[in-house]
Image (tube, rainbow, N blue to C red; front, side):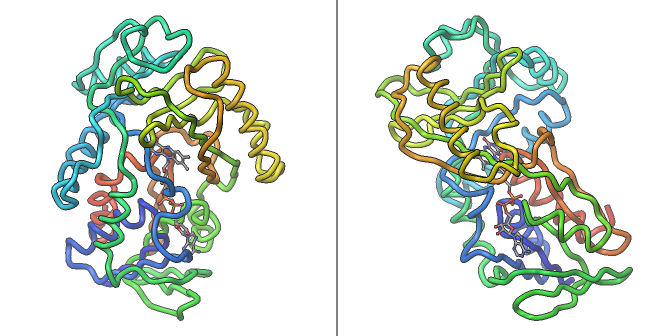
Length: 335
Ligand SMILES: Cc1cc2nc3c(=O)[nH]c(=O)nc-3n(C[C@H](O)[C@H](O)[C@H](O)COP(=O)(O)OP(=O)(O)OC[C@H]3O[C@@H](n4cnc5c(N)ncnc54)[C@H](O)[C@@H]3O)c2cc1C
């Protein structure tokens, strides 16, 4: 079976791994020099079981098993064991979903949660199997695994049909039995060629890293204070604490441009850090990406009338090993 995967982010490359495992002949088109440079860039992401939907808790649990499987292949652990702490508005919903899915969690006083917070929240939900994903190690594993299936080329058009699709790329035109569009911000325009709707709105998003004083190992922290934009935070390297979120969505709207949105995000992050955290309010690293607003956690997979699938969603990194099998089976089977 000849399969084209468009996009070598973590989603496309996970699908490539599953397809190669199942004996497909795969071409993965990527417009950048190498894989995982756009929304999958950087060196760390948060892994957590804590979601507000029991089905997503179960999927994350499967992904955790998958990361252990991948770690055996990589020869090193891919998720640190620091845990993940949730506080604020939807803590109770996440605890209820974890309970329904049979996942282990604890509710503890915020003081004992080891957060770099000036005023720790009263209570937090501890997701003990959460932690920091080693993105560099995942990138090495997936790019090496893709081998010659990974081709540098821009896909600019698709023609769909009941038994196959034609991919028009800068490298030439090719015929495939199945196609997966996993092009991140590039998915909606390509999906529209084959009648699949994917949300087209974009906004700017920046994550900042600050120096972290030496001390105990810190858990990842998702905070959703009532009536305010939430944050996600974690240790992104030795002595580095990264913080994302806490920006008014109006300040990061696409029309404002990357520069203005970046400045607004930076001001908001510095003000937040000064007021709420014990880390030094000095930005030492930034990670920019385009973002699809209002999607929330979860995986969306749509199929055309013919043989093309499009996948999109938010916070997909933590589901990568689940996407490996889910996408390969969808493309090679009829599900
Ligand atoms: C700052 C930040 C923090 C995040 N935090 C978390 C977190 O803590 N936990 C978590 O699980 N997730 C997190 N995420 C989200 C997660 O990283 C993304 O959901 C995931 O990486 C998306 O991967 P992707 O493969 O869909 O997209 P991408 O990585 O953007 O890959 C798409 C690829 O398609 C290529 N492409 C596009 N159009 C074309 C075309 N026409 N032809 C050829 N190639 C094309 C692009 O060059 C790109 O390489 C975070 C993201 C960011 C940026």
